[in-house]
Image (cartoon, rainbow, N blue to C red; front, side, top):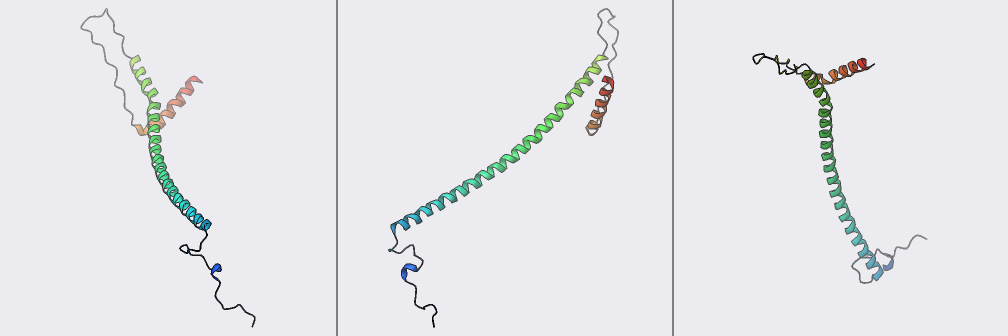
Length: 136
């Protein structure tokens, strides 16, 4: 029968054990180098996780900042309407005259009407359309 021999493998063909005294110094140095590399990779993984967590927190803060900026922009975009309304109301105020009697009463202007903000986009579109009709 010409099969494989059943004798055990020689000692140099077996997987070397790390604790054996017959290992070459180059192999021990290589194993130690790989252990140090593994420790560095674990530390890098931990630091990368910390950076990722900080980036997620930064993303949330930037989203909040963006929302706040949009709200401020919306408020500031409405200021020209407020100033226009004040200008229109103040244009109807009577001019104070110096040559009138002391007892004469000056009528007050009408109170400005408050408009609910949920109608603001429709009113803005209407105001813009009216402004284009006047200029065109």
